[in-house]
Length: 163
Image 1: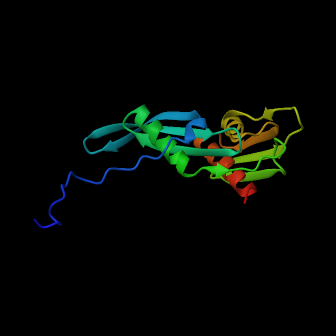
Image 2: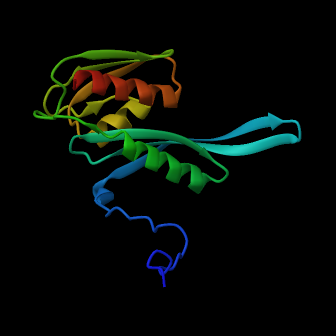
Image 3: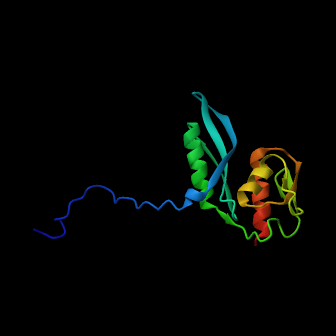
């Protein structure tokens, strides 16, 4: 027999599974919305999930994804968030200097806080900063109160600060 044709072909190569090293990540659902796409055949319903994940020790990320079901959308958003993880160097529990970032109409202003004051922020800004691992920060949402855009504004503010 020809050695090239001896092997069995059982289909595609099996995928290697990555070990679950992300088990220490906390995740929070920021926004879950039912969105509609109007087509020639009628309306198609989908779900959009916005998830923020972090380990409360200097890693934070977000993901926004759509799916036919809520669980599909959430799983896609978590997978997307794990791909764009931001590593932050937190030394004193607060940020080193004030930073202001704008994403579309959403603008956030984040300032260092005094020790022991906690996170003084509203809405999704508090969630992102908590999951990042900050303990004493003051933040203000200026402009739009769109949750997804505010999450992106905070993420890009932290990214700009850690370059």
